[in-house]
Length: 406
Image (cartoon, rainbow, N blue to C red; front, side):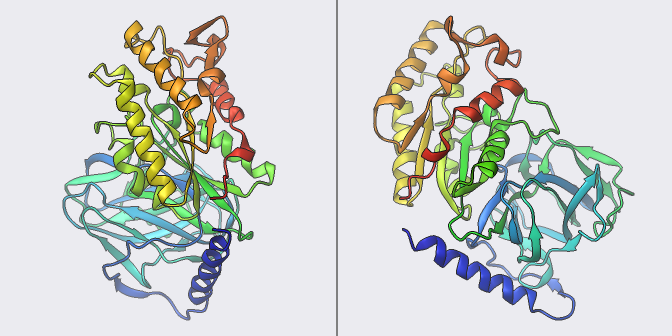
């Protein structure tokens, strides 16, 4: 696969050049169907799609997300994965956030879709925008603004963003001031990924497939202290080939059973394998299956882990698995659940089904009482780590072992 990154980036450069050479404004009208194909480049931000409440017609959104890898040719993916009717988006812009809903002057630019200013995304589908000329640095607060003129029925997005975004009714998405953005939301509506073309053709990304520990529960909101955020900062300063990080965690998610979001085994393609430039999936799931006490066995979980590893390897993607952390003193803990956790972790550490294993159990556990999370890392519920615990998870990752170069 050594020639694949170069081919991908050459194609991205051609697409970017074509867009940069367009003259005049983007034509008005509606983008045609068929914008769901994969794009080139490297994912710089992502959030797993899930069901939100009902869509609101005429609602404006200014969504704040943070990039992981820098580059040119920004593209944003919009999702209608759980909608039951077509979703139309118009007045879609991308800029750099300065403070709250206010943008950096001169940064807000219209996104188009096949050259059109409006896109209609079929139910169950997604659409990528055209690439924007210009550079977007790593570690940028990107503001994606959009309007849903006739939204109705189930909306798609990410419920627990742990970031404040902004809403309005009649706000001007093209304007860079914060005027008109009178509401706030803790969810990301309709946008689920962004990509760029990095300068280095060998750059790739890691996608973290996980639950609330990955989604950032108990980390400080608004400060990007989820463990994948800390990982992105480590990668940015380490000079590794993997620089992009896609956080595909959903709170209360399970490996095997749908519920809070589709199960990891069911969303692997949409949330991980469809993301541009992903070379590694980091799998950190299983504790919610164990806590649910639905009869899930270690054998059942092992079958799920093996299924994900097989499918990812077939797609040419590396797989790093993490052991399941301790949760004694949480309400759902009992000796039977602990026995399953220990059996699963023994398999993860010794099976050889993965390209690398990261021992998150060891990173979080109290050395004097290994069935419990260390008190200094406990977010308060004896399951989720706090900011220090999130950093400990990121620090436990062997950066050199993330890229197996399949």
